[in-house]
Structure formats: structure tokens, C-alpha cells
Amino acid sequence: MDWDKLRIFHAVADAGSLTHAGDTLHLSQSAVSRQVRALEESLNTTLFHRHARGLILTEQGELLFDATSSMLKRSDAATARIRDSEEEVFGELRVTTTTGFGSLWLAPRLPKLYEKYPDLNIDLMLEERLLDLPMREADVAIRMKEPSQADLIRKRLMHIRMRLYASPEYLQTHGAPQTMDDMYAHRLICQNPRSAQVGAGLNLVQELMTFDIRSTLTVNNYFGVLQAVISNLGIGVLPDYIIEDFPSIVRVLPDVESNEVPVFLAYPEELRQSKRIAAFRDFVQEEIFAHRQQMKAKQLD
Image (cartoon, rainbow, N blue to C red):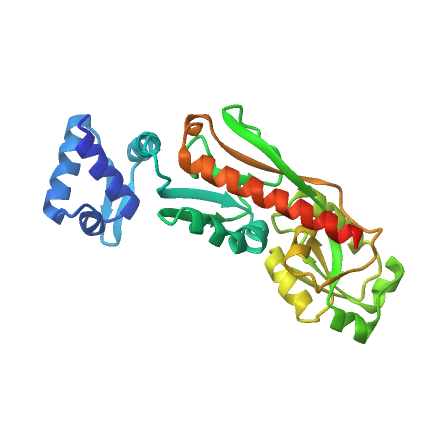
């Protein structure tokens, strides 16, 4: 099969339209249509159902689209390795992590990385779903559990715990609970037990929900929980790493916390020599070290 025809087919399947695919490929609609028709003839099959609203893949088209997706990802990986043979760190680096860690811890520290590598382009993908690194859905991941795939390089960065926090203004107005029974008089702010989150955090939330708590606010990510806490709305369940950047919030009920949650950095074996990966890995490790030192200093105060 001709690679150019496969590339054009993939663009059409991805766009669902000959016109949109042509815009992406800088080809006319008729040229795109001819290439798709020629590919169908060479395979002696129909790849698309055509209707007024666009194009839908047939069963055979779905099979071919899966194959071309894998081919393009491998091609991207090869391109990345070629680029990484250069001396300088530049180009795109696709980083995935959770919404909470990415927005509350990683993003505020990225200016330091850009300062050192101004030609680096980072695509930061924040979601709870685990992207497939070997299939190149992302280049590097920071995950709240050890990756299960065997063909990944992984490094344990640190561990975190979920704890209870409130703003000084809230505590001044409502008082600080001394026991869990006192939580009846307070509003609990936490992730919804039905939302995607780390198991240790979910277990803590479920345990807290067994107590008689009069009022709750559930949010589907820790960024929303934090905003509610600093807005003096109640007592929130938050990861302990936020203390470094939000030192004014106060921990309450210090005996209440989740089990440890390991934090891992992982990337595909094929990107072992990537200078962009190395630059990002070293940056994260340096920031983790600084974070640990600050936490130790805070404990000694």
C-alpha cells in the first residue's frame, strides 16, 4: 500500500470530511477523493460510508484506521529520536498527569524549565485517564501509581497523602474541629466518590462520609476543592503537596489522613536517549528535592 494514500486516508478518517482533510493536507477536495478511491480500489473494499453529514468508517475502514494510527505514532517516535540527536533541547514534549497535580504543583513550576530551555514546547495533558505511553499518546507521564506496562522506564519521585485543610478566616469564624464528631458543624469539601481519583483519596473520602456531616460540597478535581477552601467555604480534603504554594491554609484534625500515594515519572523505553525527556526528568527531580527540603524546614519550625 502506498504510504501517501494511507496518510490521506488517515486524515480523512480523522476529520470525517474530505474538505476538512484537504484543508489539513493542503490538497483539493477532488485530489483527496481520488486518493481515497484509489486506495479502496487497491484493497477491493469500501472504507467509508458516505452521507450528507460527512464520512463514517466501515468495519474495514476501522481496521485500517487502527493500523495507520499505530504507524503514525511510530513515525512520530522516530522523528522525536532523530530530533533528540541534536545538542540542544527543543521541540514538542507531551506531558500527561492528573488535573490536581498538573494544575496545582507542576504548572506553577514550569517557568523555571522554560527559562532554561526557551525552545521547548510542552503539551500538558491533564486528565485522570491513564494515557498509553508505548502507543505514544504522550511522551512522559507523572502518575499517582506505579505503571503496569513492562516496556516503560519508571522512577519513583515521592509520596503524597490526602489531608484536611481550611482557611484561617474560616476557622476564625467557625472554629476548628477537635474530633471527627465535630465535623457535623462544618462543611466538608471533597472529590465526589464517583469521580476518577487515586484509591487512597477515595478511601479517605468514603471513610469521612460515614460520619454525621451536615453539609458537603463535592467537586470532580482538587483544583476546585482548593478554590472552595481558600474562599472560606469549609474544610477540604486536599493533597499535602499544596502546602508549599498555599502556606496560609491550615491543617485540621492532624490524625486524619490517607495512606501514602506513590508518585512515579514514566516514559517509553524507546525514548531513553531523548534529551527533552532527560531535561524534563531532571527538572522534576530538582523541584521534588526542593519541595522535600521545604517540607522538612516547615516541620522544624
